[in-house]
Image (cartoon, rainbow, N blue to C red; front, side, top):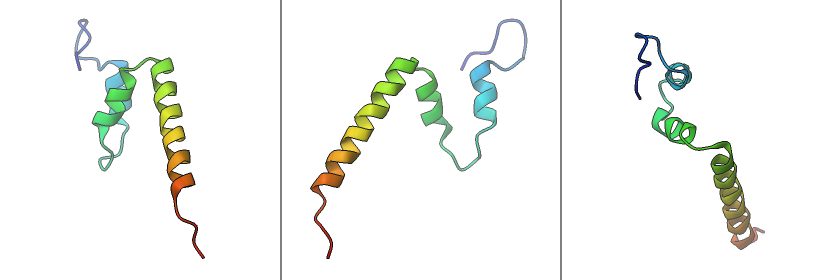
Length: 62
């Protein structure tokens, strides 16, 4: 990510990523921060739909 032109102050997204635990993949967060809120919502809805379909196809357990 690019630094602000006015100095070495981190950008807002760099400050967010600095708070992420070391075991978390920050590239996924960074990728999502590049999306608009509408794009993020659409992806979340697609994932929810996928999970519902997957759950519905799962065989019943005894």
